Each structure stands twice: as structure tokens, then as C-alpha cells.
Image (cartoon, rainbow, N blue to C red; front, side, top):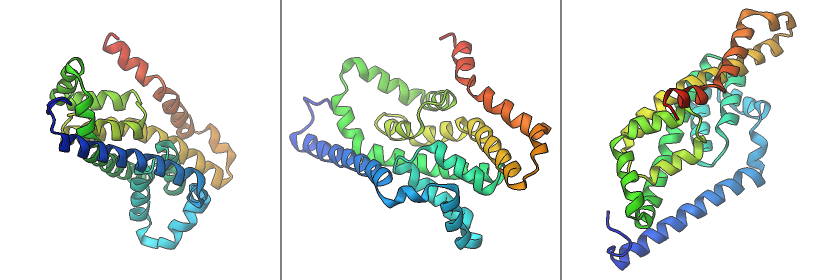
Length: 231
């Protein structure tokens, strides 16, 4: 990739235009979700009614909503919690994982298409070696960042600005989010089942204790990984 000094003027201008479009897209997405009626649909009750109307297509509709939500900077934990509350701990995990993968991939492509050229023009010699290292070790880098719970949506767009290969990113993301996604959906889905059943005695069941234990353990995963790596 040419440096900012060597890049043709037309190329720099095109890169700047794309970067501006990316910034406008991100700001517009945040404003859309935070300050329009869209926010009202991001509850288990509202989304549940909408999915009920979809019938057998509800899982596919939810995956599409999750995908779009990630691109619009809807918090992944919110979408995951909604999926677990609506579909339960097991199917919720499946649908959330697919939605997260599609959303992460789409956000990466947006970041790569609109922001990579501008980001490359800003990278100096000192940072270029790290950019190249990410390309060489893309899978391991993405996997590690996913396991230590690096903010999901910013990372999707941010990785698109680096030289990491798309399929390294997809593989690292797919493997890296499995544990956290399952723990969170199992925890929320289990508690929702107890709440709906009204059988409060189930709160002392093995399944509930396991879901709580896994949820608490998930907060220690980043520390365990960092200690293992000697950081």
C-alpha cells in the first residue's frame, strides 16, 4: 500500500471520501438506534410479538435483525439477551451465533471497503510493521481478542481497517465467540424459562447453578488468557 506522500492525489481524495462516508454511516447508525422509534422494538416483548407474526420464518428473521443490528451499532449483548429470552438457551445460542457471524462479517466488509485506504494512508513506518504482523497472524490475533471480550462491534469495523485476511477474521471470530455466546445465552435463557414457568423452586436446580457458575466464570476468561500468555 502506498504511503500518504506517494499516493496519487486522486487516490487520496477517493480514500477521504470513503472515510467520510464511513463516519457518516456510523454516526447515522448510532443516532437511528438511539433517537428514533427503532429503539422501542429492542425489547423482548416487542421483538417477540414481531417474530410471532413471522411464524416459521422467525429464526431467519431474527438472524437478519441481529445482522443488521450489529451493523447499526446495537450492542451485541442486548441482541444476544433478546435471542436467549425469545428462543431459549439452546436454539437461542444457535440463532445468535449465526446472526453474530453474519453481522461481524458485514461490518468488516463495510470497514474494509470504506475505511481501509484512508487508514493505510495514515499508517507510518512504525505502525506498518504491526499492520503486517496482523496480516501474518490474523487468525490468532482475532481469536485472542474475541476470547478476551474486546468490544464486539468496534472490533468488527476496526479489523476491516487492518490487513487481516477476511477468512482469518471469520474463522477467528467464529471460534472465539462460541464460549462467551453459549454462556450468556444459557444464563439468560435458563433464567427466562424459570421466570415464565413460575416454578421458583427451579432456582436451586443444577441447571440454574450451572448457568450462574458459567456466567461468573466468563468474567475471568480474559484474565486467565492474559496470565497464560504471560502478559
